[in-house]
Length: 438
Image (cartoon, rainbow, N blue to C red):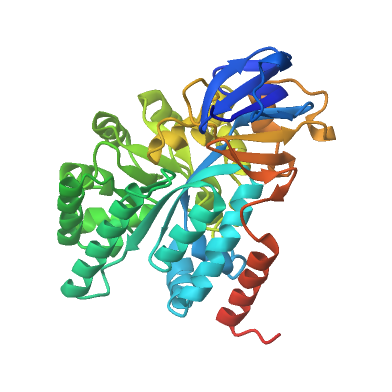
C-alpha cells in the first residue's frame, strides 16, 4: 500500500474555492481528495499513513516566481535609484564580469532560501553562470524550477555565440528530461538589444527543432522601444512576433511598453507575460498595461526579477503590488482584482513555466502548497478570502512549504538545505566580489 499524507483541520483556499475547516489527502505527490470537513475516520487509516494536524492555519497553493536571476542575489544593495540602462552598464555588468562560479553558486543558495521562506514552490531562473550548480541546488531544495542558460551575444563572435546557443539548448533539454520531474528548461536570449536579429533567428530555429519554449526580456523601457523602431522600423514585440521568434508558449518578461495593436497580436499568438511590478517601478521603467492584458485573455504571471533590482524575491509583495498599482493608474478600484492577482501568483505562473498540474488545491493536481499562520494581528479578525491573502498576508506568515507532497519547510524550519551555511557563503561572496576586507 502507498503511504498517504493527510493534512487535517485546515482552512483551504485557492481562487476557485474556500473551505473553512477541512482536510487534504495526498498520495504519490498528488492531491487525491479535498474535503470541506475535518478527517475523523481514524479506522480507515493504514499503518503507513501520516496525519498532520494544522489547526489554525490556512492552506493555499504555493506561489510561483516566473522571473529571477538567482546568482544576482549577492548583488543585493550594491546599487539603487538608477534607471535600467545606467544600472546595467555602470554597475551590474562590470560586477558580473568579476563574478566567479563560486560567487554565483552562493547567490543561488541564498535565492533558494529566500524563496522557500517566502512561500515560493516553483520559479523560473535565467543566468549565464553556474547552471550546473543551479541544477544541483534546485534539486536539493525540493522546489520546482525552470532553469535557463541566458544568452547575450552582442559582445562575442559568431563561433562563441553558436557555442552559447548549443550550451543553452543542451541544458534546456537536460532540464526537461530530469528524473525528478520537478525541472523544466527553455531558451532565453537576454533581449533584442543584446542579441542580433540573425542570432534570434537561430534561437527560433533551434527552439522549433528541439521543441523548446522561448523567454526574453522585451519592451522593458521606452528607450529600448524607441531604439528598436529606429533600427528596424517596428516595435520589439510586433517585430519578434512577425519574425516568429516568439509565439505560442513564449514568456515575455516585462512587456511594459506595448501598444493596443501589440496586445491583440500577443493574444492571437498565445504568448504569456511575466509582470514584474516592483522591479519595473524601482528602475523607473514604467507600468505594464496589465489590465488590458487580462481583458484580452493573455496569461499574466508574476516575477520579482533579481534581488539586485527589486530588492527582494517576495511574491506576496508582487501580488499585492499588482492588485494595487493598476487600481491607482486607472483610478478604478475594480481594476486587477485580488482574485486576478492571486491567479497571477499561482496557477498562471505554473502554466507559464510548464507545470500544468500545479497552482490549484484540486484533486489530480500536484500537492504544491503552503501553510500560513493566520493568528497574527494583521490577519485578525480572520476571514477566509482571497482578499485577505492578497492585501494583508505576507511572507512572514508562511510556516510550511510542500512540493509534490514533500515537506520543504516545516514549522518555519527549512528541511532540505543548510540555511546557516548558505547565508554565510552569500555574505562572504559579496564581500569578495566588492573587495571588502573583513
